[in-house]
Image (cartoon, one colour):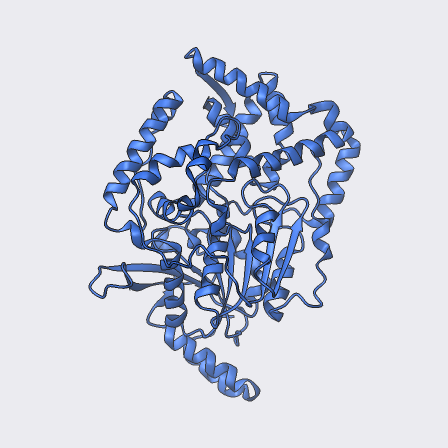
Length: 533
C-alpha cells in the first residue's frame, strides 16, 4: 500500500495509541525530505526499480573533514523504507566489503535476505566515500590484450597503472580511510534524523561497523559482523595461510566421502600438479588457450590460462559455497588436462568480481594506510605464496608509492565495545575465517559468535541466518534466541549426479534442511587480486 506524505500524517493522528511513534516518524521524514527522493524509475534508467518505494539521494560533505575550505564531495544514499507504516526508530545500515565496493550496488544482491528486518526498520545503504557514486577513486584498468601478456609483463603493467593512479589522487587519497568513512556514516545518520542505528557489515564492512561502534558508542545500537576483518588482519599478510586452510578443509571432506575420494582423490596434490604443468608451459612461452562454453549463455569463449589465473580461481572459488562444491571436480579434470569446467568457473568468478565494482584508488587508500603499516620487513621477506601467488609482495610496490594518511594513534588498538554484537563466520572462508571473529569477540563482552560448517565468505544468506539476524536486531541480544539451526548449514556433497544415488540423497537432505540461496552474497567478497576483502 502506498501512503502519501499528507495521508501518512492523517493516519498517525488517527492511531492514538501510536502517537509518539508517529511523531518520531514524521520528524525523521521531515529531516530526510530534502535529501531523499523516489529513486529514478524505469523511464529514466531503463531498468526496473530495486524495490517499490526506494528512495535515493546524496549528502554533501567536505573531502577533508578537518578543513572547512576543503572541496565538497557527495555521498550517495539509498533507503528502502520499512514495510510497517510506523517503523522502529533505529534503521539498519548495511556496509559493503572490498575495500572499494559499492554498498548501493550491493543492495541488488542482498536486500531480500533482510526482508524480516525491513518489516519494521528502514534499510540504509551508503556508498562509502571513494566508491560507487560517492566521488569514486577509480584507476585505469588493464585491457583484454594486456591479460594475454606473460605474467611478468602483466604485473609490470598493473604496477604502472597503479603508479599513475597514485599520482592522480596524491592530494585526495589521504581522506578516504575507514575513519573518514565512519564520520560520513554518522553525518548521514544525523541528516536522516535517526538517533541510534544498527549496523551490518560484510568482510571489510565489518571493520567499518567496528570503528563506528568505537567512535560513536551511544549511536550504535547493535552491530552484525559477517566475515570479520579487523585491522589486525593486516591485509594481505594471512591470505595464503587462511586460503590454504580452507582448501585443505575441502580436501579433507572429499577424502572422507567414499565417492569423492574414489572419483577425485587428493585435490591439493592434483592442484600442485596442474600448477607445475602451467609453470612449465609458461617457461617455454607456450600459452594455454582454453575454448569453453560460458555457463550462463552457452556461447563459446576462450580463457588464457596462466599459473596465476589457475591459483586465483581456486582462491576465488573458496569465497562461494556454490563454487566450492565444484572445486574437486574442476581440479581433478584439470589434472587430466580437461580445463573446460575450470574455465567455466573462471567466468562465474569474474562475474562475481565485476559485481563488486571495486574502486581501486579507495581500496589502496585503506590497505596501504591501515593494514600495510602492520607488516614488518620479515613479514614481507618470509611471506608464503598461495599456489605461487605472492599476495604480500604483490602489494609492496603499490603501498610504497601510495599517498599517506594520518590516522588516530589508537586506530590499531583492539576495539573494545559494550555494543551488542553478532559475529558470523564460515568454515571454508579463505580470508576471514572464525579465528578473526574469536580475536574480535574477546574485546566485545556483549557478543555472540556463530560459525557455519558449510559456510564460506559471508553466511548472512544461508539457512536460518537471516531470521537470526532479524531476531538479534529486534531484541538487541541473542538471549533466548535458538541458534542451533546454524549447525544444519553443512558442507554440500562434493559428488553430484544421477549415478551417485547416495550423494544425490544427501544433497536433497541438505537443500531441504538449510535452504540454498539462489545467489551467493558475492558482493561482499574480497577481490581476486588478493589485496582486498
